[in-house]
Length: 139
Image (cartoon, rainbow, N blue to C red; front, side, top):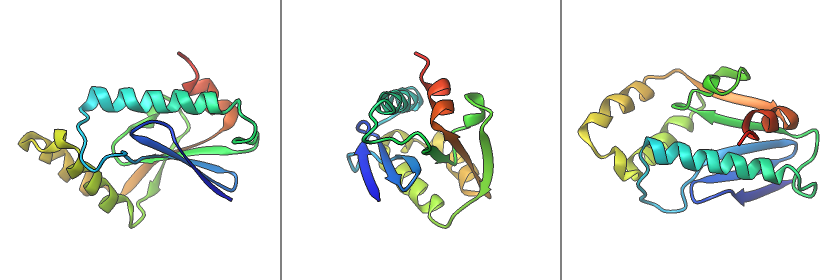
């Protein structure tokens, strides 16, 4: 079973079987999000997901939440982070998102892009429902 739900203008939640995947998929082709706005929208999406956890039609107790990122260090928020090898689709997707964000069209942002493109692994959280609510349910 596959079900998608837009959490806000920047994040989408996809449910496949017993896994929830949170991904950064802006609604617009071109958008502007500096670091502060990016993390604010991410926090809003995670808070909305926590509120969705109360909806039993959308969520099962045994379901796990998974998020992957080349740039976000989840270890600052939780200890449930691991490094996994990059999939072939991680880098092209990041490059597309990178260039569609008008904030990154500044010369000083190229150094970070080059660092990310040299990455060999991706940071991933994979937590159960209860743990996700404990971590991100705090206001």
